[in-house]
Image (cartoon, rainbow, N blue to C red; front, side):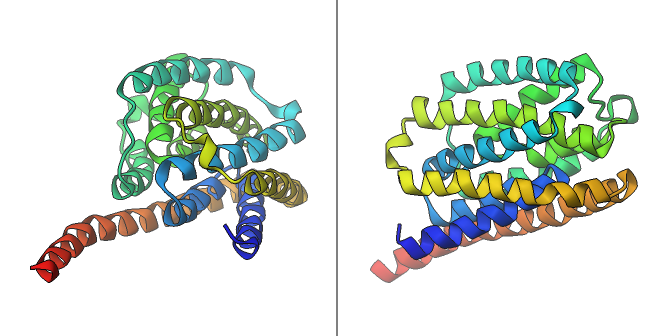
Length: 259
């Protein structure tokens, strides 16, 4: 990857880390879409995992006083179950499938019956969402839309949402790194310079967002976070659908051109 491309990705990572630092969400969702467009899926997953571990780890440290630890531990149980299952199958999805899954999951969570609406204080829901989110993480690179909807469904304040979700995400992205960097064995294809830039850019963007988050109210946070999730999810549904339709059309065109 050229120095110009690395610099451009570094700026993008600062911007997406700033967005995640502000809302605790959405930045990673945007970043994985760009990386999937530029790299093979497993390599994109490794770089995204490193970037998000740095971003979420630094965010969890900055807001460590607001972490709700019980939801974190319960969530980790679900993550472990999902990793065990996916390590057996070693499934790596196509890009259109990954993008469509990114888009539909927030709407799936919102359509759940009222009796099982997301509640981060619920033990069984924490394990369930941890398992589903980790499976989604290994398929698409992020579990943000579903996890965001899960944490927004409770009574946490904006600082608690950002801090607790960041802690859960560190574990999730570390698990993703183990899966794609070890089990799928793609770590060697990652440029170490790009990895270093990703870590530095993620920490910078996260730090820049802290003061603005302090200035927001909980109501403003929830309104804008919900709008942001919906907008990005709709984009990925459209983009994934376009790729799904485009692939067989292009294949048929290429086949016809060869005859």
